[in-house]
Amino acid sequence: MLRPWQTRFWLSDAPGDSLQDKLVNQLTLDIQSGRLAPGDWMPGSRTLAQQLDLNRKTVQAVYEELEAQGWLVSQPRRGTFVADVLPERDFPGDSDRLARAGQAMRPASPLVASLYSNILSASDQSPGANDGTPDVRLIPYELLSRAYRRALIRSIKQQHLGYGDPRGTVELRQSIQKMLVMDRFMRVADNEICIVRGSQMGIFLASRVLDPRQGAIVLEELSYPPALAAFEANGFRVVRCKLDSQGLDTNALQGILKRHKVAAVFTTAHHQYPTTVTMAMERRLMLLKLSREYGFAVLEDDYDHEFHYESRPIPPLASLPGSENVIHIGSLSKVFAPGLRLGYLVAGSQFIDRIAQEILLIDRQGSAVGELAVAGLMESGEVKKHIRRVRKLYRARRDFAAETFRRVFNDRVEFELPAGGMALWVNVGEGMGRRQLEALQHGDFNHGSQFGSGRSGQGHIRFGFGALTEAETSAAVEQLASLLKARA
Image (cartoon, rainbow, N blue to C red):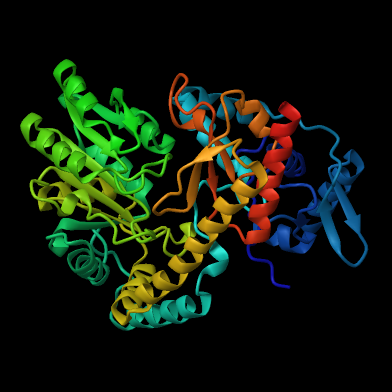
């Protein structure tokens, strides 16, 4: 098998009086620092001698000395390797100075550190941790692979693989523009759309462009933790607003506006995260009226608009009269899979230009091949066809999850059947603590206290059913029942 890279060595700065001493010390430093890991193959003595312009006998003597010290091992007919068990692992002074340089880092907030830790711990779970994610097993991989192949060939022939527009390929922006106009009643031009790597990037960029000096960010009483982390990272003070069965309480918001200067309100109006409720039309119109009256922006995270089951979904805030201050954030990740990393941000052209300027500093642009592939699927109608197919399946999974909770718990838990989305918001009782829920060791339950502050969300869990088969749903709910029974 070909080796992907040839390990290079440099002796000029190595300590030692002779070339042999320098090479011994340099290889030892490389092993101690981790540049050469246990089990790594070492170049042959002739190859290393040619690379460093040394006599081969010098290299042979160095290998023999390092074998005697326990740093290297020689295997007949295979070569020389770094020993699996090393004589010592102390870092030398230079490496220690490099490690101490990390003290100059700005520390992450406790919330960001917690989110990162949860992601790392969830990466080994099966099924993966979710709070309403799509089932990646449903992805039409053959369809996608053909679309990517066509997009790659097209990109090469039309020279799309160089640097392009940081707002995204015009093909995907135009495809999304057609979808928003025809399916969501939005009046938008393609220069008012920017492609991002998922809704979280859109939230971060929007809060990056907005000015913290203009006031606080208002979040619903229970809200999306990564959004809160993004606002705090960009210097915003966060104020929480009351939430009920009709979504954001606009009467409570009026009280906040009288007491605080507000730069923006962040809301998940379509399917409130995490409670799944839909904001009533009366409140939508009042929110827009207040936005015009007080001059604040409305950040609308419409993360799963495609999955509404009971009737036609209520049009987005950005489609309603008086929506001039709305910044609309959408995602294609729920349609296919989170790993595809495609979302979009819709706002006035000046705001979009500022977003694109920020993208130039951190990302330059997205994947032209991926964007062209999805644009092709949207134009051919395959995306709409896929949405119709999985929407039926997710509705069936919602209904099965609800039936399973009722069968297993009877009236010991309470929940409202959500009109859409991929999660249930279940009241399991005030005695259910986070530590007890963590004892489930199941990534499909998220304790309500994760989404708010104080006692907000206590006694509730968010159960993601979208990524689960009926058998997996049954097992998860029964596991929860066993835990609650043990608690009682």
